[in-house]
Amino acid sequence: MVFVDIDPQYDAAFDDWYWNTHIPDILQCPGWLAARRGRCIEGGPRHVAIYVITGDDAYETPEFHAIKGFGPFADKVRNFTRIRIEARDQQG
Image (tube, rainbow, N blue to C red; front, side):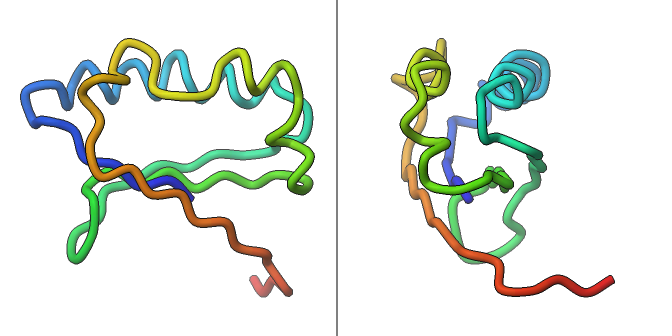
């Protein structure tokens, strides 16, 4: 999971880049299976992305290293937090 804040004046452009560039690029990387985005409504940076990966090795591929980060918004992102969790089971 990735959490970030960005100045509201860049929200529309950031969302466009994230949905139309970053997520398609990251899902082409080996080991990256799915991505979802949302907004925190309480208690944290506003933007959140949740990724499903095959394992920690997904972070080590050359493809991921070539596209990781926030592209044209790198200098505008604040309060970056990444949390890695391991799913233990699934229901529903």
